[in-house]
Image (tube, rainbow, N blue to C red):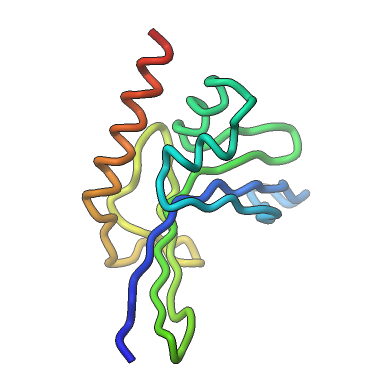
Amino acid sequence: MPRTTFYEWDIETVKLREEADECDVIDHNHADRLETLLSLEAPDAGDELKMALAEGRVEDEDGGRWLVLVRDVGSNDAGLLDRSWAYVSGRKLPTHFRNALGNATQHRVPQKFFREFEQVLRKLDGLRA
C-alpha cells in the first residue's frame, strides 16, 4: 500500500514539569488551515492572542501554547509510520521538520505552508495598524 503524507497545523497546550526545560503536551487543537486554527483557538480572546500565537509561543506560569506544523506519514495497512514537527518561533517557520528527539530531519517544510504562514502574518499585522 502506498504511503501518504499529511500536514496539519496544531496548537499544543503544554504544562511545564519541575525539571528545567521539560514539559508535557496536555491538549491539541488541529486544523488544516492556519487561519482556521487561530480562529478556533481564540474566537473570543481577541486579536492579541492570535498575534502572540503567530510568534510561535504564548507562555504562562504553568506552561503555555505552541504553534506547530505537523507532518504525518502513513498508509491504510500500516497506520502512522512517521511523525515530525516544525515549531514556529519568532514569527518564523523552520525550513525542516524535527523528529521526536528534536533532531532535524531531511524533510523540508513545503513552500505552500510558508506562503500560508506569511499570508496570516500579513492579516494579523493589518490588525495592529
